[in-house]
Length: 239
Image (tube, rainbow, N blue to C red):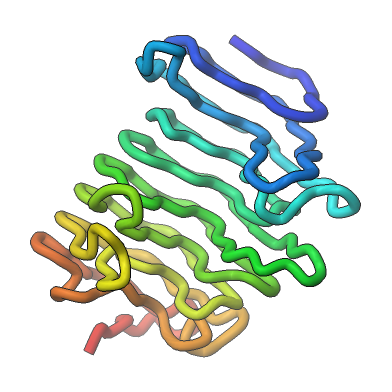
């Protein structure tokens, strides 16, 4: 148990059954790729199990933080609940087996002249993830979307996206994992259920629309059900 502390810098978890709770992490990474919280395999490649992160706050220092530094990076499974992440360029990056539930995630830091491609939650390949009940926003220059899935490193499979609120200044509020330009272009069993697409920046949520990454109809097992516009409550249509 790591509880009730404030950290300037980084927290790295490699052991089973770690609980990180009621912790503030001041994200002060000055180079691309550094993290505030890392859930990582041990040297033999074994991921920790039972990692739970609850009620934490990760906040970036805009004076020194690089906008390509990752606030939370999880190549291993974990659960993130009831937390706040803001003042960062790239907020949460996942791989497989994670649950992201009930969080406020705001990627709103962009360094002047940066060519970063930012998002609040991103998956570049992975499976068995749940994204549920979060407020997810990417604001400012360099945003691709609020929640993005790309088949860059492996196929996107078995992903439940439900009861989230999305907003972005980027091209689309979400990318659903099936893009011809990626090495693994077709997702499998991706479900978007009862999400709300906000209109804080554009009437279409993203600059060009609510969702992209739907080649092959979103891939086998794709479900789009009960997704609505925040302002009107009307269904968000894919047609």
